Image 1 (cartoon, rainbow, N blue to C red):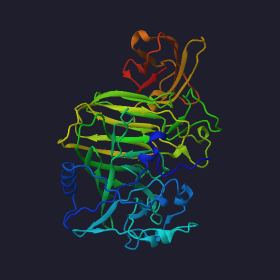
Image 2 (tube, rainbow, N blue to C red; image 1 turned 60 degrees about the vertical axis):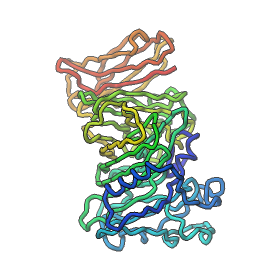
Image 3 (cartoon, rainbow, N blue to C red; image 1 turned 90 degrees about the vertical axis):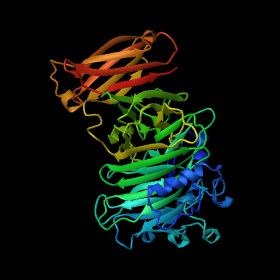
Image 4 (cartoon, one colour; image 1 turned 30 degrees about the vertical axis):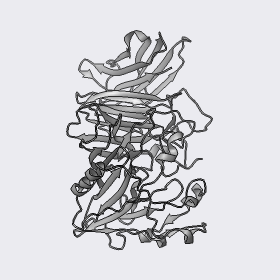
Length: 512
């Protein structure tokens, strides 16, 4: 089986850029400066200056092409050297060693008692395993990133909670999860012909927690050629780990596509895939669908795919109530992977605070012939043009969890399957819906299916029916579709009765 690297990116062609670790930059902050306001002021100042790559050189012999993944993985941080371990605090911090893809380091400081104290690189904090190059490591090289630990299952053991490593990526875990998809601070021009830009978190400040703290606050400064920004992360561990994000962004130049609260995941193949690969596992993915909550009350589910070519879908929303990449299929039998445990990968939900105005959620599905790259990206794009000199403020929560019965509160799609159809020139779709109230409907009062295709004259709907699925307790919808052209088609389906909609809306794009 493949072992995932610590961080994957959106397409093999982008890997070298996105996996570059973060720049080290010494910022002249006074000892009393410890709030997000101070980091925001620094971001504003930097936005008015010409971008300079503050990368602190990591020797070439430590980078990809010279250092192997196994060599880098064999460098392990000593848990006994964790920050705050000896103080008995409810959070502990470990650090990542630079090397391989991580050719940048970050500045890290602790805020305590009104003082800002830098955390210096300590070579003695690492076990280099079988490697024989420890004596060649520069003593002041700096760390590539950091990882927070907290006791989520028992008071005695500190579980991995959240990682900040590479560009603006961060990954968190709910109590019962294993690592899967990543969140990011920002996305710029993803899948654009001009190429994607990857800003970096260049400095972190960790607020020292109290002995009885149930959350940890981290401040971060972001910089890239087109934008700077400040971030405040308030991390609350639990069965659902919640990260409250406050961000303040300052564009340096016009940005064609600014992605807010981006999520990055992997979808190789699943139950609905037409592309198949030589693999013993029935399904391979970190997420199986995109869920949207509209201000008007509608919930929409879009199953993910690994398409033959890039598919960028835009779903317009005013004042979005939430969006996320979810892993709904939690049955081990559908993955059969004892190593990666994909049935335990986190679902991740973004919930905006305040009114984000008019914009769209964009879903980018990128073709991939391997599970080792993240080929799915979802993010919010504001309609308003992004111009230099602006200040853009976005606050939201990002939750990482195993399942949430309230997403959505009604019936949901639990499976999407398709084939070539029984009539030879059609596509056949078989959808399973399930939910507490939906499943309780008597067989004598089945729900009705509402089906649509857009544009309306692009296809004919054939032979649709609704039937009880005795294996799930829910309801199955099946229909066939005959295309009238090669143009892209947007399909939608939901269940209703005389009282109104009973389920979220299933949405699917057919591209030739």
